[in-house]
Length: 297
Image 1: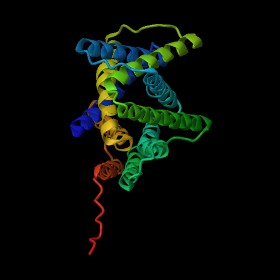
Image 2 (image 1 turned 90 degrees about the vertical axis):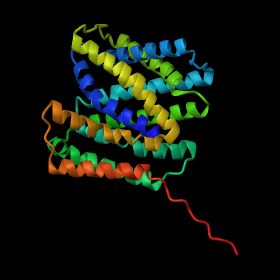
Image 3 (image 1 turned 60 degrees about the vertical axis):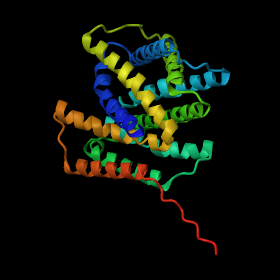
Image 4 (image 1 turned 90 degrees about the horizontal axis):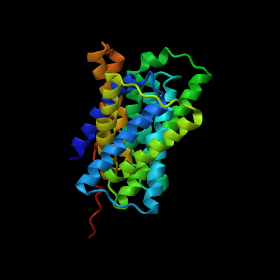
């Protein structure tokens, strides 16, 4: 079951970049993100109410959902969209892949969980592999003040993503399922985004073109309802640090799709990077050997 959820998350989020690319244009970025998560929240609430599976949340649960919506469905996306305007998308992917390491460190600090050496080692291999995958893009980029702004925003977005992972893990330990908490979190995130748009004077426009509508539906239902539910379920079952290795595999799927759709050419460094990513994947999911206790006489 965990493997199916893992593969489903990687395949869905590895292909959402096509839909995100189609969203950029007429509608402002914060408003497009608000449309995405408000529609996703509406679908989740409808499904939960019809099936009578909507769990009641107390004040503590609602407060954590609000924080999760702020981190995971609002600030996280604003940071990455803005960072992509200043630094190459490959560099954003490399920064985002450090979520595995951040989740392990944050789980240690806030939950007291032991950091598994194989998770840290696998994350390091994955990070090195992504650097090789995007090396032509990274080496051709000139450092500037905007580069540091972009890196800072990408790191902030990754930290928000990590915080959202830990908040979901906290909710699941309290017996709350991701379907219910995601519905509230997405609702709060979309409302915060709408308030930001109103404060900034962003015109409330909508693009009725088929490519915008279909990309919005793909991002809202497979990309958000299914993708986030599958991923955060993994966070509760496997732990935030192992589940976050998905962030390393998203760009790999995206590059394979690009090879078919946009003529991306695999190079020797890119293939070596792919090998490192796969080695990291094996390390992250390798079960630690049990420590044998010496027999007593």
